[in-house]
Image 1: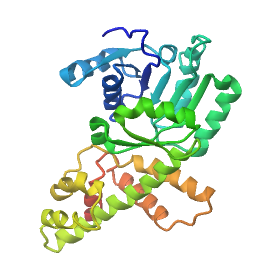
Image 2 (image 1 turned 30 degrees about the vertical axis):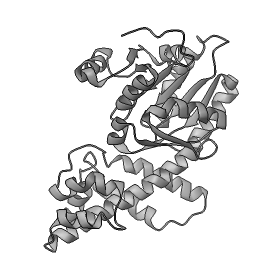
Image 3 (image 1 turned 45 degrees about the vertical axis):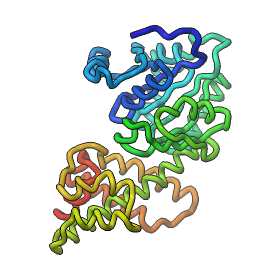
Image 4 (image 1 turned 90 degrees about the vertical axis):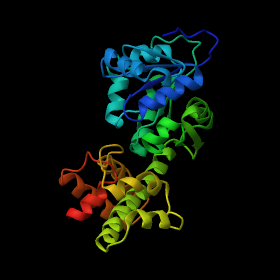
Length: 312
């Protein structure tokens, strides 16, 4: 892999090379010419994945042994980790991001961390406050959760919900431009609020699609024909477009895993409590997701709602 030239003012890094982080890292490398990555997985395994993709990867991807090395090498880092506890661990570990911050020169720009994970808005604000107290302006946070699933991550068509100081969000939007459309929605935490709202709609929609599919099929309708027709009316949605074939065939092999809706809806519930909103759908959806997981279906695709309703 080629070394980065000193002509690039900002270097981009990614931590969290899962179903979303890895394709986003490839797009960042293609868009910026270079991207730095690190992972809890062994370097050999990660680089083997890269080699297996061959010509699908453009730009240079550079491996860093630790998050500290990444922080020392990069100016902007996308975090695609499961939740805040993993982010805090990545910051505070002996070889974590904060250790790398100490290796940066005084002339280096503030290290920008874009939190692409779906997590608590108050939790993100609390973390930012802690970092400001201990490190001042040397490290700044933007929340940048995404919507669009694995397909969007691969195609570079994600919706990226930014929250934070306007200047910091501008930097994050420039960094993440190869991955989709990034829009600042307000101060720090606003991105997480938007993501909670997004996931509330996604949850309601996928359970409605699953339930409607069972009702139609048991009534003798041609399910493929029905969804083709309804997809041209008010029942249309990106989720119907992406899951139509799965709903018709019953294929719920893992892609966008449904168990993660539990955490997302917990964030929405926290938001409802904070805003004194007496939600109607939220409690029912949270209970339904619990039932899906308790039925042993949590690792299946979102389209598993059809099977769950049919077997309930």
